[in-house]
Length: 118
Image (cartoon, rainbow, N blue to C red; front, side, top):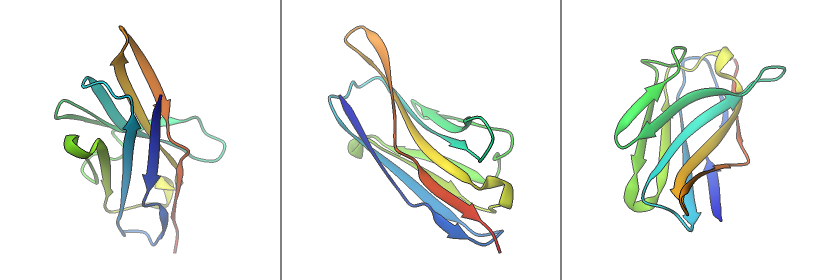
């Protein structure tokens, strides 16, 4: 089993910054992908950014503004969000996938609210 603990959400004005973090613990494989998704009210959950073996992948809507990074020693992924816009308002979910017991398994965090408003 894998546990994910998220932190860093909150209320910020347009143009501001926030940093999200997500730490994984439990029975972890060395082969894993961590990332962030978000879900705004009335919308489907969408990918924000993922990081696989040092290779980041971003949604077009956040390229140039958000940066994902990972600390392998701490099994933690970060999302630095700069230049926040009202349309970035959503619940942000940490996602963890790992290859364990000969199959891929996926876990989700509980989510952290990010609100961008003046």
